[in-house]
Length: 115
Image 1 (spheres, rainbow, N blue to C red):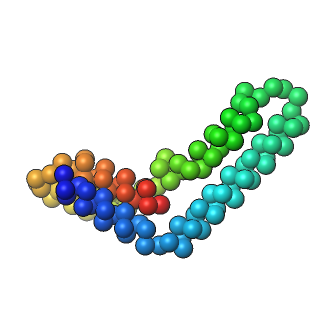
Image 2 (cartoon, rainbow, N blue to C red; image 1 turned 90 degrees about the vertical axis):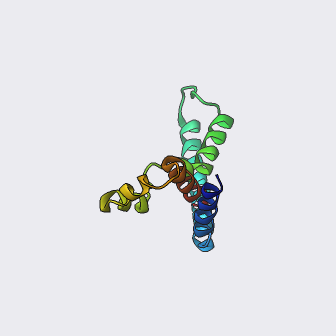
């Protein structure tokens, strides 16, 4: 278990090295969230139909969506993992005495949390 925690810590520290990029990403998420809320606010005011979500529900949904975007983004691909698949490194990892799924899960979880 300590090997998985070590990999998690190593990837998390590596991802947190770029603090300027992290702050820029946070600012971008706030800007994008406010922009989407302004667009929805315009639709809510101009529509004569009762919306499916109330305004408070929509605001909560939008901010949760923005907060967890790094965790649920589907376009993020681990290039280290794909490189290991294409060059055959996965075959060597199958011979090692650890659970490969847990190892990759710890590595990807740390990468997504640090982004």
